[in-house]
Length: 395
Image (cartoon, rainbow, N blue to C red):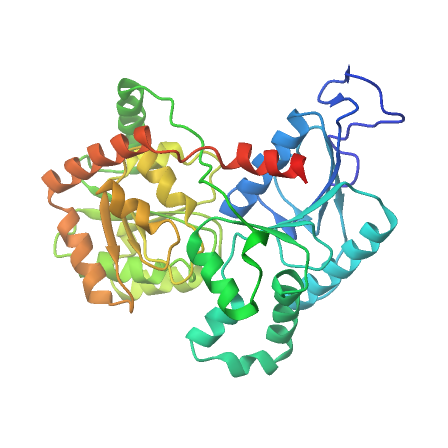
């Protein structure tokens, strides 16, 4: 997939000339979007795609620079895949940042928006946690002397150091506090975005119909309590914790559905070791998650690290109760909604086990389901994309 796929070509600015995908006018901006890897089932990737799509929809010229692209192209944007020969993740990221930097020096853009930490950005979308804070918290800061951490920290410093001019989109106040504590980043460089999930527009009847259909597809028996795990980084998001909690349940009429793409072998081995391999079902990455939110009875998201956790809000919008950890930036929404359980740090496996066992109480599950739907109806969980693009246009 190379440059020019889904590309709108412009020779001279013309007032409101419309092509199949784009509108060109005097207000058109030339925008560069930088993301190391795109795949359609990652939370950060979906945020990137929706923001870039809205920029295209508003008639701006969008160039995308990426090291790896999987899935459908973004119509109306020019996608340039930068070949990376480096073997390790940190070396690949450094090569990518260097190659993009060379391109940006030669090409004039009104705004450069990055979804990975690197120099030369006008705006950085902070979809991850502060690495320096994480290493310090885990008492692993000496790892900073290792090459991979040294390079990642260099990229992080390029964005957040006090003298940098990069504006920073953040998803929670917690991120602001953390980065400021370690980099003394001026507060006026942070832009707090509201959440940006897609609205659930299904009627109650439609949701029930989908639930029945997908439970019939996924489950061999009707009265199974179905826990759902959705992520693209299984270890980071706590799949091992979820499997251990499932194994602790005395009632074996419960199953765990795992949606997402990652290495399966360590988790299959764990499920086999705990004698729950028949109760853990891996179905890979899925483009449409709503069907699984509706089929499931509870989302389990016992993450080790998560700057936001968009999946928590998506689950709430479909009336799915949530069990998560307080490290997730959006965990406070679960508490506000009164639609689940937020486990406090430090993590305790026994408490997660008990939380899953509590969910088998059908009455609590129904109450939390109603609370979730009401919260999603009354709370702005949807305007991130509009807010982000409005800011980009004002830069």
